[in-house]
Image 1: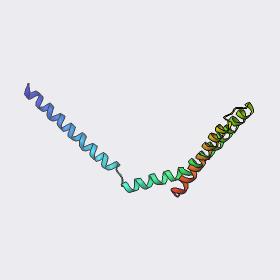
Image 2: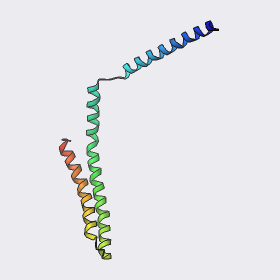
Image 3: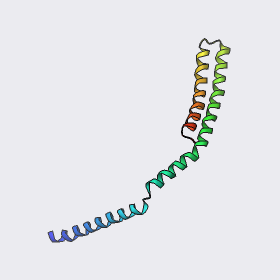
Length: 109
């Protein structure tokens, strides 16, 4: 019985070696220059940044409109914390606009 298992173990070892060899050659075929990959990622991020900045400005505008309606409702209702709510909404809108502008100028995009 031991002789029967020996050819089977040898076949398994050969199969594993072939699989490892194919895996290594596949990795070499798919690898690329690291610097080229970093440059491509940099180019792609920079190409999407203008759209992202415009999106942040649009979100800031929508939040400004929503905040204006909320503050108007509180003001008409005579709520005593209207100033606090107005400052919070205005601050969030300014934060979005400032962050988008600062990141844009900081990274030179």
